[in-house]
Amino acid sequence: MQTNLFSRQPPSFRSFIIAVITCLVVLFFNWRIPHVIQPARDVLYAAYNPIYALASYPVLSREWLNQQTKSEAQLRRENTAMQAELLQAQVRLQKLSELSAENTRLRGLLDTPLIIDGRMEIAEVIGTDADPLRHIIVINRGASSQLKVGQTVLDDKGIMGQIINVYPHSSRIMLLSDKEHSLSVRLEHTGMRAIVTGTGDLGHLKMEYVPTSANIKVGEKVYSSGLGAHFPAGYLVGTVSKVNRHNTGEFAKIEVIPAALLAGGHHVVVLFSDSLAMEQPYANR
Amino acid sequence: MPIAKLRSENHRDPLIAIIVSVIICSVLIVYPLSYAISGARPLFMLLVVLFWTMCQPTWCGIWFAFATGIFTDLLVDAPLGMNALTFVIITFIARFLTRERRILTFANLWVISFLAVLAHLVMIWMVQIMGGLQFSIARHWQPLVSSVLVFPVIYFVLRKWRI
Image 1 (tube, rainbow over the protein chains, first blue to last red):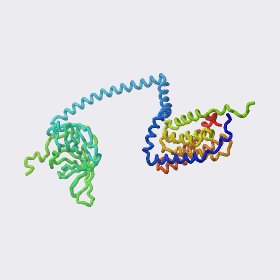
Image 2: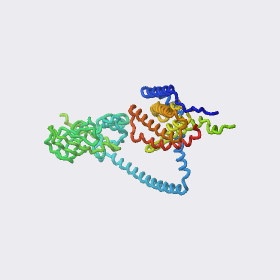
Image 3: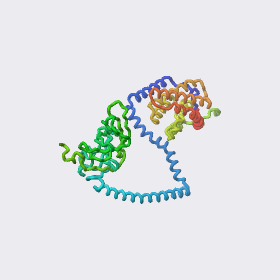
Image 4: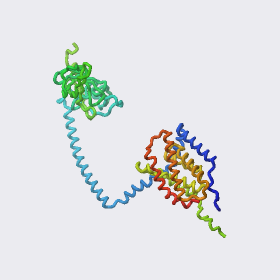
């Protein structure tokens, strides 16, 4: 059959207008009320699956081809490399078991009351508080290990914080760097008392209420004073890192870097010794 | 006596070819490419729609362009109706402006395809600006070159089914 000689006629305006209006309506729906369109989209995604599968087929087949066309020499090379790797891994594994034995010995040593006055409990850090603005960690010891609220927590460098909640098998510890945490301290050289407060920054503490005239040097160590009812005396808190006397107030601005690894650390020590105030029989006189 | 110029053997039924070409195009427009190359991916669907509407006007018209546009929108997760709108407008204008021509040569079609791709990119650009979508201006114009280069391939593959 012969085709229409005048097939190149312009398309009708009517269908064009209808199509454009339909497009605009669909665009409007998609823009204002997309949840009406979404079910249709979801259904059609399933229908499109073969197309997506077909599109990903060349990628998959390239991988398959790569696998199939590996030469024997290549496989031999790979095999040699893997054997060498395996040997290395086994050597490392031996070392690891030795390290683990050493670790056990050291932990046993730590557990003796020779190092620190009074009983102590070693705990593992198992979590942090969900609130990023609080500096609170969770340890795996609790009331079942006779822990109580207010006990001091240390690591091998210095004081980390204190227990604020005790649950049967875990406890929450507020770190020194928490904004709401304060601690009574004593300076190394002068023995002057001060208060160290958290700033919300894990690497900085601030020392408050120290008069501008006080004799404080950068690098001086800061120890817990044992005053107040919580912390035992004589444990390292941190080092003075900055002394700023040029502010207008009557107190100097002093920064302290905490000695304990507040941001890291896996094991902590919970102390059972009492604070100085509790140890002194006539403290409340 | 047979009519010498009838060439009826060339006028094959293009339905299968239309469907297959649209499916192959949809595979090509979702074929996974790296980010750097995918910006220059030719507008396969537009070129094929243009070819069919210009070379098979009895089969493919405004509604073919509309349907393929919606199909493309769903396939590439574009705002529904965006490609459909540009396809319909481009098809209509191309057909309207060539209504006086009996035969479209390859050179004609190539120039038309260039203008169509340009018009498509401008319209998509405007829709994206209006919709407040974020996109890269430099990347947006890359398909122009690649589409113009790809059109001859599409033409010579599909030439068998043109009138």
